[in-house]
Length: 249
Image: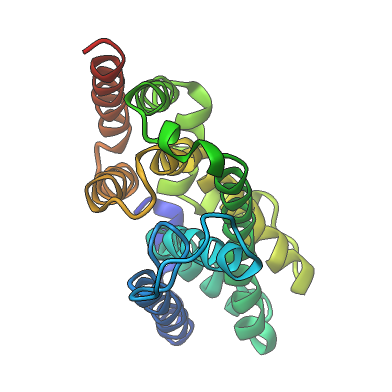
């Protein structure tokens, strides 16, 4: 926590408690939902259906991606949500609750948009589902993700996710639209930090527990640990090495 965050944290703990409760409740619901949807887009325990995507299957695939993104990323946004709640409480105490809700909602809707794009991509490539998990495709995806981990854009977005207060203050606007805009802006920074890692799950299999755990741990370490930028770079080397190994066995 930097000096700016320390100054903001001196406010009342009431908005903090409400915000953490909201974030925890939503994230828990999506973690629970992940157990009910499998990578083929069927509810857990459902009987096999036609390989062609039907409307209900597309909804389930979207819910799987939305649940995966929300369950993984919303808890990591708790610091930004808490900081925003305190700032909103100082500037507009009467509407602080609603503003914080809109901040979190905009964050979720932005990741829902990413989930929709991932669903469309999975649907488009459904006929080549086997190719998606082919070592060559997975190797290319991991190598691209590894290279991206070293780019200045990745580290700029990571810096914002690690210390979100300056970014929240930079575009601060009072009112409901300002709260929604700040939530969307923070989500876009998080997307810039993690989008290629999340898409790597498409090649590995979105419900692959090993791939999911590896991505979740890497993202958590990047954002929460003190040496996050070094971890991102080392993780990039590991991803590049693994991708190269799959490409040239």
